[in-house]
Image 1 (cartoon, rainbow over the protein chains, first blue to last red):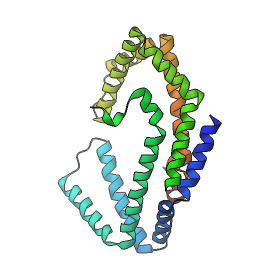
Image 2 (tube, one colour):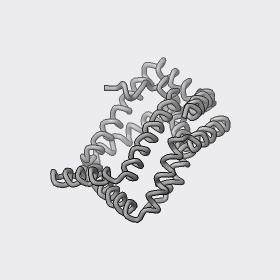
Image 3 (cartoon, rainbow over the protein chains, first blue to last red):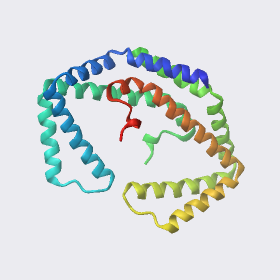
Image 4 (tube, rainbow over the protein chains, first blue to last red):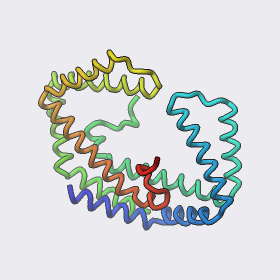
Length: 118
Length: 118
């Protein structure tokens, strides 16, 4: 199993050295250094988190809340740095999903592909 | 990024060749070949899934249902093959959680460790 952990560390290093990760890291640092952008993003994340927690608790989101979230999203998208950060996050999220899919392929051989079920 | 995907494939191969994965694969094949064990496990998995889906929908699990699940669990644990399979699954689940933790370390540098929050 130590071979497996060695390979995981190699993968981590490769991810860390990738252009996609470096771009995200750099954008995040730029936003941290920009008071207004930082505050805007924090407020938006807080709103998102509140709505997610409600959904997880089975609480219905009101139309007003959904509209407010959409407006906030459109607002933060206007900010170039934040918009770029969100795009970079989305890219990395796709990559990490793909990496997970590759790594768990052996389990699919046993249990089948869960994305093909139902 | 192709380096990252290459490393993910190497990790997948290492995982597939690990003793822990091979043990799980072998136990699963043995259960597939054993009508009674297979049926017992299927029934238990179905019960588990039903309860999980209820929980995800925010439906309260009754005391009777919880007891039934616990009894079923104790019953399947009596079956040596199933008990070994569950142990092997648990082992692999721990390993995969650890691998994910290693791989996403670079993200912790940006966002902090989510397990340390709150």
